[in-house]
Length: 464
Image (cartoon, helix red, strand yellow):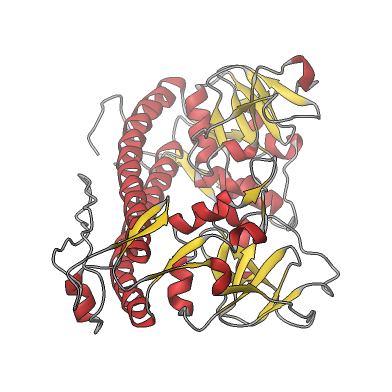
């Protein structure tokens, strides 16, 4: 429902507001409170940087103290109830209300207002306000930033204070309901992703259900019972089975490996070095640059997107050549799972291990098995370091570790099983993520409509 009458503003992205409202420069409703202080005087206080604010939602993410964040330069001292706004990359729309006193990065502005603080926050989260910011920083490509003077001149709608409070009550109610639904769907997606990783881990260490192996054309696969993973929001469950394996009456045999006491009959347990060998890779600086991601394996460097944190060296003469089918390990991040079988020809950092695999292991199977959680735990056991992120993999230690290795036909049956199950899980996850995206778009549209007066609200609470 709209208001009865509107008046023009002359602003393209905010053409009208209800009668009784104003459209004013931001400095009329709020102002920046700059208060830079040395961090060593506030080591136990919370420290907030742009990374601790979720873009477009106003949600504060987990934070650390000044001491834990190793802050070296002066930060702004802020107080509970002030608005915190990121002035760098402002189109990410990172704004929140401080729930406590603390320090914030000099890349942020502490903001005070004599209007309703929550209304001003919603106003700053709205598309109309973001359009005003975009009009200022649209030509700043490398590292866009908005200064205090520019921020002070952004047009903002200003309803009477009682209307502001009604808007806040309405949006708090609606947004809380939307956020609750979003959180439930995000949790369901996370559970499905965890289930997928569990399915892969079980398949590459204990085999696949007997019915699945027959359907894949494999006749000599252990029929291992698979435990169910259930959740109130998911309908996914691992198959279970009983019986024997082909011509034998045993479903498993001991391995002598502490982390994997038994494997299916017919599988081998071999030292890693017997089928994985570090290559003496020549340099080929003219080849395409590749990278290894924790959740994606080996990818083209250009596909790294915003997650790509480390700059490459300008000198590529020592970079190592990778052939399709080579196993690539980030030496310092393998313990976290930064490994993968490359589908590409290209080059990687000299800090990586480029590993040639013997013919006894199928490349597709290897990409699942060698990236699975049980194998990543082996890399961790074979890594040494003092930091919480970088630990060097000791190859001589790793190559002596014993790993399970099924026969090639079994490997291919496992790949077929994983890909079939993964396709269904991935489709469900994609659907959930699309629902979350639409809910967030609806929330942003709702905020924009209400704070600019395109939708009328009263003090009455209504249901979503």
